[in-house]
Amino acid sequence: MNGGSRLAAYLALNDIERDGAYSNLALNGAVRGLDPRDRALAREICYGVLKRKYLLDHFLSGFVPKGFNKLDISVLTILRMGAYEILFMDGVPDYASINEAVELSKRFAKGRGGFVNAVLRNLSGNKCELHVAAGEDVLNRLSLVYSAEPWIVELLTEAYGPEGAEDYLKYSLETPELCIRVNLLKNSPEELKKILEDQGSEVGYSQLSPRGLRVRGTGILETEAFREGRFSVQDEASLTACDMAEAKPGMKVLDLCAAPGGKSCACAEAMENRGKVIAQDIYEHKLAIIESYAGRNGIDIIETRQGDSSRAVPEYEGQFDLVICDVPCTGLGVMRRKPEIKYKERPDLKALNHLQSGILRRGASYVAKGGALMYSTCTVTREENEDMVSGFLGEFPGFEKEKEARFGPDTGTDGFFAAIFRRID
Image (cartoon, rainbow, N blue to C red; front, top):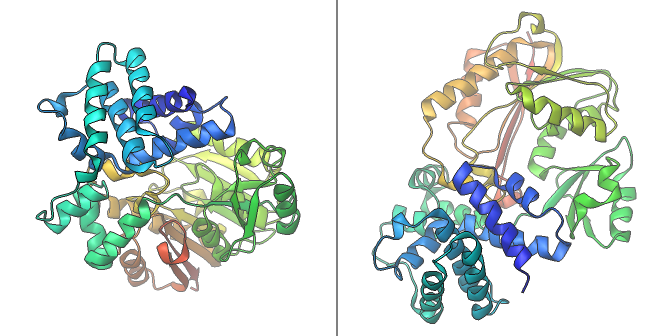
């Protein structure tokens, strides 16, 4: 068994738990230097633990007579990793998972190797008897079985009903397919498909976007095609929303919440790198990420600006053919990719809705007559999506809704919402 994979998974999980790091960034850093097979194992363990943390803790606590909630995060992380392998990875022998956990303990939890060994051996010996009590009420049962904060279960139940909420939570445990956006400045979908297939990847066309490909394979982001900017990673839902906006050559576009730059670059590519895209974000340090993204893709029409998108910028008034408002949201649509979202404290939804509507109002004031306004989120709640659309239309009669789309399990994509408005006054 390869200790490097488990070391990478441990380091990433530790960064996420101790420092609140984003899972994708923590894991990408931890697996650097590993071969593709070891990276894949590290990712499976790391994301597996994150997606099932509450359930793993529930089962583990049954074999720790007292003090489970007081365990140091290093010990707890090692136990969770071992438990995930024992309970959910049939291809790994239990004894190997336990031995690897003990080895990690020698390095990161000195003196606790015997404890880790005993807990995991007990778990292994009794795993056929593990279950969640049938008497749990629906909210608690779903929260435990699918490892999500109760407030998330409540919102999903309001959006989909009890059965639909469970289906969605089950969907959040799946591993999403990799979708890439073909950079039409550098190649066609057909050309890129052949390039990636020649390198050993399995590639299919997106069913939603003409410039999307679904890819299966390892090391995609280490390929020369990626380094050359021939494609970027972007989920089909987000990509299709950009297609809905219909950016065209020569347009002047404003992306108000632009980082990390996916929608700005998607628009610039659709514009054939002709026109102007202003990519604004509140965090100045993220502007360099956008600039790097654009440079790799051969785009030179993007100008980055730091700014709070909820505040007015007089020089923007009525100046843009397309304004994109991809607003901060609860993020429930991307739990498959960012499972740490499932453990966040409940946000102030009223304040969040106020921020969303404020950005949308600002965006509306920047649209030129005849121009388009895009509102999008990566969440599934009515309050953040359909209610925001109806509220906006009631307040701004000078706009009409042209398109609206909700994405999710039925489309095989992230949960996502997008609406396109046209200024008609």
